[in-house]
Image 1 (tube, helix red, strand yellow):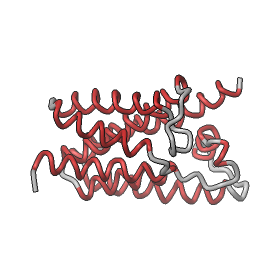
Image 2 (image 1 turned 90 degrees about the vertical axis):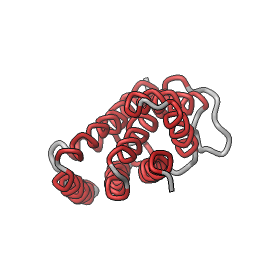
Image 3 (image 1 turned 180 degrees about the horizontal axis):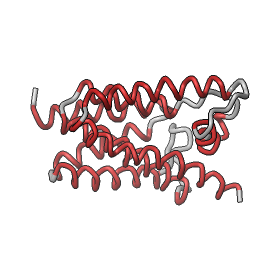
Image 4 (image 1 turned 45 degrees about the vertical axis):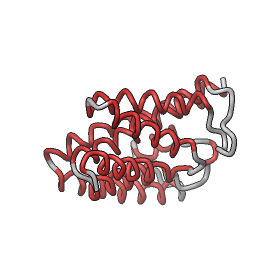
Length: 196
């Protein structure tokens, strides 16, 4: 029963990750309004978290946070949504359209599926990774490669970025992988597409 509860929380958390794959589309039509909306989301979420920690709940936001929060987040400010949006904003500001989409897809699908596959099928832990599993890393690589290939139609770019995403995701970075994955993979994609 406990495993089922953990998996349900992970599904909620990672569905938010996966939904972020729509942001490149929004950025292509409404770049600055999308950036402004993302910044507003960070501010609103942060305020709601500070209030939640003082037992003042904001409808919907506090419920989603409680539903998705991991056991280690009990009684703490849940940073995941903040780092997720900051990572997306930084990637959008530093990268052109395609590298930005590659960075966001790496985060949405690679990081999203790594955790889900790891929780469902992961038995063997990666050394020095604070609980990451071989199954999760394989899930990260496959999800990254497929989503990036569908986006770029380039097996070369998809393979390199999927490998980079998997490497970063396997590190014990906590919620900060939400910032490092899209910005780093977006920068690598920029080099691969446009050169130096």
